[in-house]
Amino acid sequence: MLKVNDLKINDGERAILTVPYLHLPARTSALIVGANVEGRSLLLRTIHGEYRQLEGNILIKDESIHSRKIKRKTILVQPEVHLLAKKTIRENLCIPMHKLTQRQIERAEQLGDILGLREYLDSPVIRLTYSQKIMVEIIRAVIQLPFAILIDDIDVYFDSRRYEKVLETLKVAMESGTAVLATAKCKLDGFDRYYRIDQGMVVEDES
Amino acid sequence: MKFWWQFLIVIAIVLSWDCLRLFLEARVDRIGNQLYDTPVMFFSADDGLTEHADSLLRRIAYVKHLTVIKGEESSDTLISKYGLQQARDILDDVNLPDILRLNLEPDDYTEGSIRELTTQADTLGIPLEYDFNRWQSLRTAYDDAIVIRGTVDIVLAFVLFLVVGSMGTWSETRNNLFWKVYRRAGGDEGKRLKNFIRNYLALVFLPVIFSAVFVFLVRKYVLQSPWQELDLAGLQGIGLLLGTLVTALSMRSEES
Image (tube, rainbow over all chains, first blue to last red; front, side):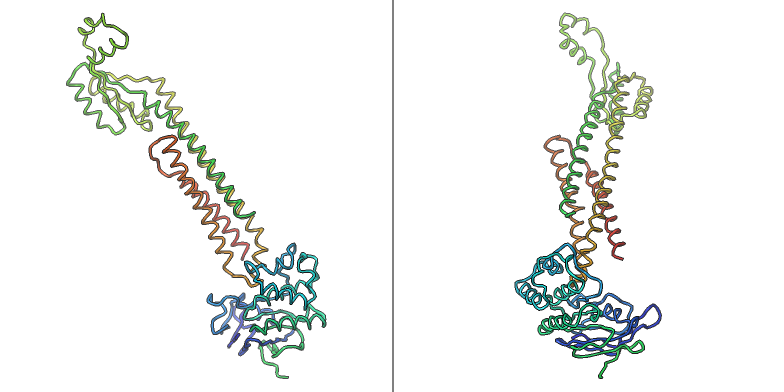
């Protein structure tokens, strides 16, 4: 369970964004909708533990996101690609782990099938398109089964067909207990909960 | 560059340094021994004065060895050395002086100590002799050998620092992309630091320990020289530590 309570993200003196309440149980997905410069990416970076000028708390399993007690807390996927271009997809999937388990290999192949990447698993990443690279990052996040996968600007990478496939991929992780939190500039289908950024405050969108 | 390559390069430099140092040390010892074997001699015709001079000179710290050769002993030596059996009667009639033979510590066998001994000789009223030309050439060679040894140590410590610092900086800069991807892929945030500490602890301490053991064994079983301080291992440790520090600083500036 990801819990954000009375969070204020600051920029020096003033608060840029406030999140009074955002609880995301396991196996749940949520989308945060906001316009440009409203702090969508900053919110995800803060939840990921990268940005630390904050008040309030962000908890995973009732432990602070900055606590060292919890491993594999969140994995953040951003527009900037984080893959080694000359390595194959398979090698890139191994990067955070010493070695993939048989279960992870099977899962990676299953997800490769869903996303149409199976035949490229042994090809270098440099040959892939931008959206395929992001899909590789999503597969890498899913096979690790973190507490939460955070995807920034999910609306910019994929066409509608691929978007459906990516949601299907994320569901594989959610079935194993992972929560998914994404941001977009407009409301998209396929999420369990919706939030919007309204005048510097993240509020639940019930409409 | 794989870390083990860095490790092997450092071991190669350290061992080469050890060999060069042992060679230079042996050279210093050889000249030192020659200097030690160039004695200062006092001559005394009076037994009482010989005893007084003996007790006085033994108190001087840099007098490492003092031998008293009595006059009769000198005539026996002359007879046996040169086969002068027929001249024994003549030599028995001559009172040869006692000789006080002093071997000095090479490090302290300087102009200053010779001056001090000359003053002692003047006070006692007995003459002093030594081979000035031999002493002067050996003294110069000894001082030069020590300076060369020290210079080589400093230059090699600097080389070790440069090699470790540049190899480490280059290697860590090349690895930056990997670690960035590693972290973003969900890898342990502290893994890079843990790896760095583990690798560089090994890079600083293992070559120093290896070198100290190597030098100790060569000194003990090959050169059979007495125990010497571990100043070489200390210098190597400083070079390695400073190189590692430069690598750590470059890594830190890349991360921030």
